[in-house]
Image (cartoon, rainbow, N blue to C red; front, side):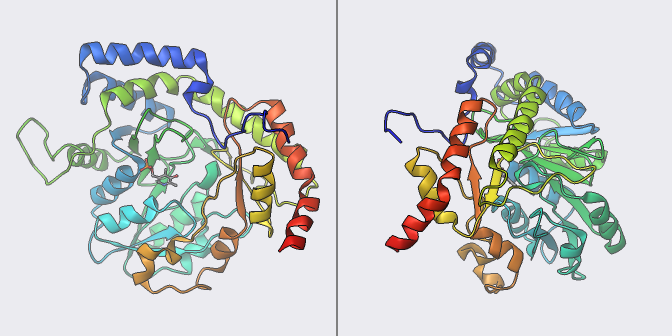
Length: 381
Ligand SMILES: *Cc1c(COP(=O)(O)O)cnc(C)c1O
């Protein structure tokens, strides 16, 4: 394709929506003029709105999705000697939070169709030391939580949802994040609800967990220079809270757009030599943070799309148990076969609310000529 055609990126941020951008710039000026940078009304206002949005009693703004997971675990009393079940096909933050509190991740495999954690894959790695399970609503698709919650109750373990990719997704009609003991959200700029920097939130219906997270994020101080527990600095910035509060009002519109784009992509890619994301199961949801296809010729597909100016991503190329960071746990290739097989086959296609039907057609056209391209690559190789 000619070089004059602009690249189709994997994602676009707020600059893709000029009206929203203007609104956010006004908010930025207001926060700057008031000097309302730390905690205060913007953070409290956003927390109330976000808790309401998630159908949860409380939301606590924190500095990132990683710190949301970490503080939720600390608030639940997870620490040294404990194990926490984590799917091996997540962003590494899910495991890092476990390590940060001094506990050890127990990496689990996932369902081959959905690529999500299930009660069966959790049960396969349960030990007496497991005190918590972290299901990840990966790519924006909902984990079937009920059987995992039942297993956790039976085992005496907590459940912390990693909802960092699934803002607003519904499971049997209820928003994710508030369905277990706590839920963690990330507002990293490219997430479905993104700030202009880092941010996150813990959502919970447990007032004690909420109180502890509130203390932990700000030096364990219920009042200035009164320190009741040892905390840290992990607050959501006032500026980010004000921006997020504004963007939350139109999140469902952008999510509906993602769902529609996901359906369009499925339609135009049907019958092509790639595996599409599994259809949403009854009672589940998919808010399409990412649109991930699978193929045995993944690297050839990426090269082919790149030649047509289409960016792709890998979520995630290395299973967590095979990263250098977690080599000390001693898990070898073959330990978690579904995750390992998927890691070599996944390819994320462009997905963002400002994507157009023209963009969709462009992806479809490129993929439709992929088979030939793969043969060409195979001939050269
Ligand atoms: C983004 C993400 C995180 C971490 O969020 P940060 O805000 O980047 O710290 C954790 N888990 C998952 C599944 C994520 O996608």
